[in-house]
Image (cartoon, rainbow, N blue to C red; front, side, top):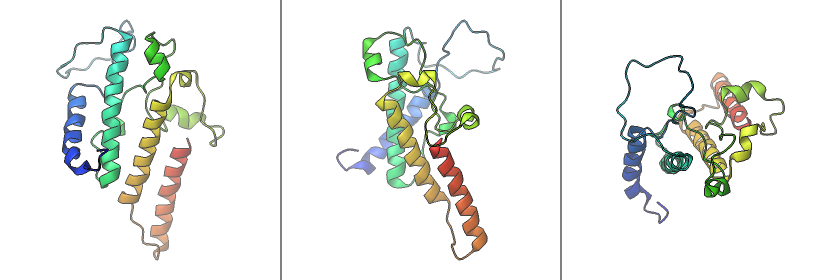
Length: 189
């Protein structure tokens, strides 16, 4: 991809996205195995990977997933095609800050889950000009911010590809502007 031969790599990236989904790397393992389960699924997917034995192994799997996620977003933005890994299907925590990962000690407060404008943040926004600081924000670093920024780029790209506008039609232009303002608010949050 970095050498400018992107089209030859896109099919490999597509295969990688399918593989991380099959390995269930897009979904976080249960953070607390002793937590009571209020509901059970009647069917479970076949598990290809054994549960993680340590916090380091869980973080390594998290980072493998996020790297494939970034490549998927890059290919999508570069081609204008739909993403293979949809944001709605990602139930994964952001990777921790690199120095914390290198230290190898489990975090006291886990990193936040992925989501540029999740429901909790949307209801607590006081000042949309600033990012809401929460306790779990202290453990994320540049890699996590890169993931969120790439998702923002992907959202903007998809918006301009999917929403055509006829500026001579007042109603059509007004609907487009309303959708654009919704995207803008989401990005601010």
